Length: 379
Image 1 (cartoon, rainbow, N blue to C red):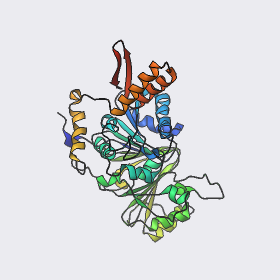
Image 2: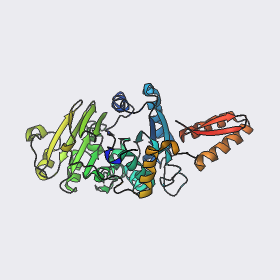
Image 3: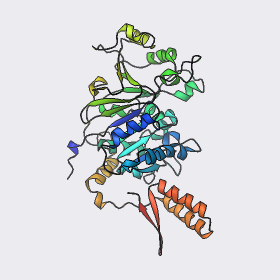
Image 4: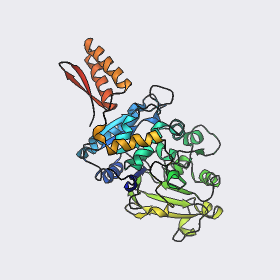
């Protein structure tokens, strides 16, 4: 019998960028070595769900893991939770089913605000929270890092569309643990070269100062450099920086010792923030570790707190009695199986192979037998 009170949330991995770069491989490697053999990794499609090639966008992560980290024999499955009120809804129990049994859940590129709209209070998001509290790793990159903030930065709306600077309510992942945080990946981005400041996730230092003025006090901003990861370990209350850059912690309205001095902040665009908001700044580079308490007063909620009862019970049942669970193929898998049989009947082998791969991406393998095709979950 599993003692739920003894379970600790799994690590949280936050990429500033470069999740498929050599630095990204190093970050994934530091996590995968602690997971069970041949870990099941669920790749959530949602942040890019509005794009016509969203499956290919998230599929690149799966290919990277399958090829570059093949020593761990990862079992990747794409969770096609693209948009509410469609056949690929994040509220469809069959679509999001792989989340409940994943050892790691990954979300990445796309739009932060789109991800928030589709996931806020959704079945998919609640399943992620439940599985994480039961020990699964959450790995986030790019748009997903922004989306899980208490206040999410509308990057495209401001940078591409020209809307006035503002914040949007985010998914507030760490709010469940009593810590209001804002995450800013691409912290040191320099795509704009000498002509345009694109640091601070393409906002630039001057605009970022004004954005900071809009945030409430007693909040911490976490800036993560490009090709750099921040790994948070709730189990022992530590954080580790891995990659080619560093992590910046900007505490608003809090006096604290050990922060950067005024001289050290010159040229970073943070001196003004520190002066205006009574803030202080910490910087940690590759290989450095620091206490989670430096970010905020993280605390473990009671089991199931803030989650729908049925979602929590489903998540718990799959770790306490997995042998009693019999997964059934979702409707979309059965539909694709029928389409594959029709393609085989028409001797369209290319289409049949394509459908087999789509079924595999949904977490099921097709076994062709004398009695006909049979579906089995990918294990």
